[in-house]
Image 1 (tube, rainbow, N blue to C red):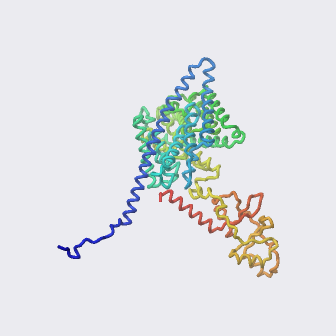
Image 2: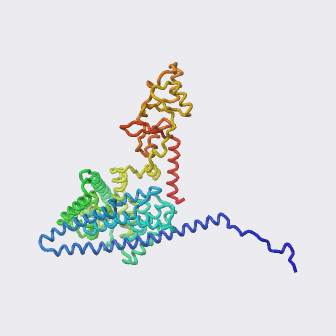
Image 3: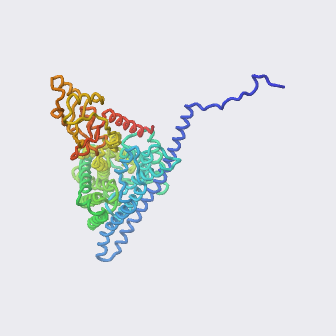
Length: 594
C-alpha cells in the first residue's frame, strides 16, 4: 500500500543552530579554557612558591648554623663570606643562565601593559633561582618580589600551551602574580587585589574571575602543604584609644617619607655610572660582603629577616636594638638592591616599617601610659605603611594585613597609616612606587595610561611620509603657492641641496603676502618660519602626540637628529590621531578581554 504524497518523508537539510546559541557556546568554551588555565597556573605557582618558602626556611638557618661551628676568626670571616659568595653565585647565574637579563617586578609590570609583550621564560626562571641563592645566603633583599616574578613567568609559560592559549597574555601573568602572593602569605584576597592594583592598574569583572580562581587554587595548595596559618597573631586583644589614631597617622607620614628616601637611595645607586660600570660579579660580591660586615653587629638584617620581623611585631625587641637594626638594614638593603642584587623590596620595607613603628611605639607609650601596653600594634602599622608606599599598593596592603593578622580592629589602625604614607610618598616622589620610578627613568610613565605605553613602543618612522610639499630657499612665492595647491597641502617645507630643514611657509601666509603686493617672483627665503616644534628619528609616537597638543600645522617635520637637521619626512596629524585612537581601543580590549 502506497502512502499519500503528503505523508511521504521529505529530505530536509539538517537544522542549523541559531547564531546566538553558537556565540553562547563559543563563549562558554572560551571561559572554560580560561578557568582551566587559571587552575593550572595557580596550582603550579602554589607548589613552587611553597617550595621556595620551605627551602628558604631550612637552608638559610643551616648555612649560618654551619658558620657557627667554625673556630676563632673563621667564624667572623664566615659571616662575611656567606652573603658575599651568595652574591657571586647569583651574579654567575644571571650572567650564564639568565643571559645577563634579570627579570624584575618593574619589567613584569611593563610587559602586562603592552599588547604583544613577551617575557623570556628562561631569563625569568633563572632570575628566580638567582634571587633564591641571594636570599638564602643572607643578602638583604626580599623573597616576595622574586615570587611575583616567578608567578608571572609561570603564567606566561603555561599560556603558550596551544590548547589553552588566550589572546591576552596579561591575564595569565596576573593569575600567576595573584597565585604567588596567595601562596606566600596564605592571603588570596590580597593576592587578587595586588594583581589588579600593582600589576594591571585596573579592575575588570571579566579578569577578576580567572585571577580569583588562580589565587584560590594556590591558597589551597599552600594550606594543604603547611596547614592554615595566621602569620602575625597577637597574643592579646588590643584596645585602641581614639587619641592613638593621631600617632598612627603620624607614623604613616613618617613611614612614607622613609620609603621615599629608601627608593631614591636605591635609584641613585642604580644610576651611578661609576658603580654600574663595575662587572656584575664584583658588584654583587661587594654588596654581599658589606651586608656580612653589618651583620657582625646586627645579624637580624640577614636575608628577608622573617625572624626579626616576628620578634619586632611581638614587641620583644628593646628600643636601642630596634634603632640600630633599622639603620643597618636600611643601608644593607639600599646597597644590595642598588648594586643589582636579585630580589624584592617588599620584605625589607616591611621589616624597616616594623622597626620604625616599634620605635615610635616606645615613644608614644612614654607619652600615653594609658594606651596599649605593647609596641606590636605600632610595628604592624609601620610595616603596612612603609611597604605599601614602596610597592604602590595601599589597598593590597590593607587587605594583606587583615588576612595575616585575622583582626579587623587592627586593620583600622593600619588603614590610617597606609593612606597617609601613600599620600606623603606620592607627593614627594611624584610616582607610586619604586617600580614606577624605575620605569619612568626608561621613559614609561604608567600614570598616563596603557595607550601611552603602546605609543611609546612605536617609532615615528612607522608613519613617516615623504609626499609633502617640498621647496627650497630660492623658490618664488608664486611657485610655492603652486606646489602647495598641487600637493593639496596648507604648508610647504624648505630644504637645501642636502635636504637639511630650513623652515616652512603656509598657504595662508603666501596668499597674504601676494595680496599685499609682494612680487610673485620674490624668493621664499626671507619669509621662511623657523620652528622648534619638530620631531627626531628616535622619537616615539607618544612624543609626537604630546607635540601635537601645541602644534599649529597639519604636518609635523621629522629630522634625523638635533645635530643633523636632515628632513626625513613628515607625519600627518590625522594619521597620528588615528593611531592614538587605535591604542585606546587596544587598551579597552585588554581591560575587558574583548
